[in-house]
View 1: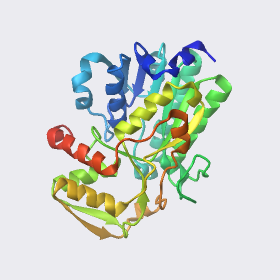
View 2: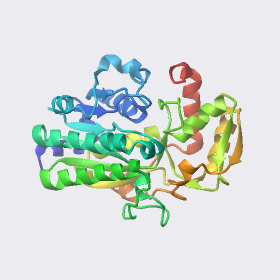
View 3: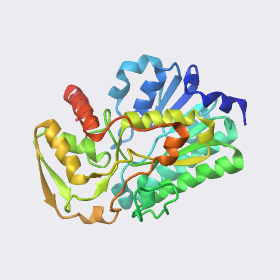
Length: 337
């Protein structure tokens, strides 16, 4: 294997590495950036700042002088072919974030979540085959859970354009790995939440949206009986896994499910938020038509493959994560509302 990739086996060698984070002004990307600048990496953040996604300049305010920022779009071939050159690691996190919006505008979703990622891969093939690239997929790629916990061998039966475009992109990464030798790591993420997430709408990170509702004293609507199980992963744990996997050549060319590995009833998640914030209430309402069509049933992540590959386990339980997230928005809500 190429020496440049082998040198990344030790996570500490991020010092002086050239890193590109697309979608880097969002929750996950900015968390990765903050961790990597502390390790001495030379970080470039690229973000299109397209509404209504999660880009927020405040997410990097205190590290702004330690990173490079480029306002661009993964669909812009000319920008991408320049930005990927000479990069050691690319965290390709740019994306359309709403599965319901993908139902209303499947062409936009395909343009960003599939064609945009294909554009990055093709630029790597042409200009930088030595880079390692990480893709952020979704647990929604599985569709309805046939069993839990869900491992990487579970059938993929996406129920919305968002999910099948994520799957198409994942297959493209594997193709470029197998045929063109592009080193990639593929994640299928459960339900991420935490600090620095957008708080303006409920299209991404339901936990964060519910924290806002509670902080404003509103009533949180629970679809159905609220017994459905979900797996929620705190952004810091997620970022740590991304960073470690990119730096481990044994993870390259592999697909990993990532979550907390713990199932929580939806209604219990809501109760934790209300109790933590000390405001708000909840009520049960029927499932809306635009949600029931993508409802997947209970979901818990089998994190066994990832834990074995990286000796990684989440450090933050849901109660602690919600408490830390609430404390962050208490302090900085004017930058996110």
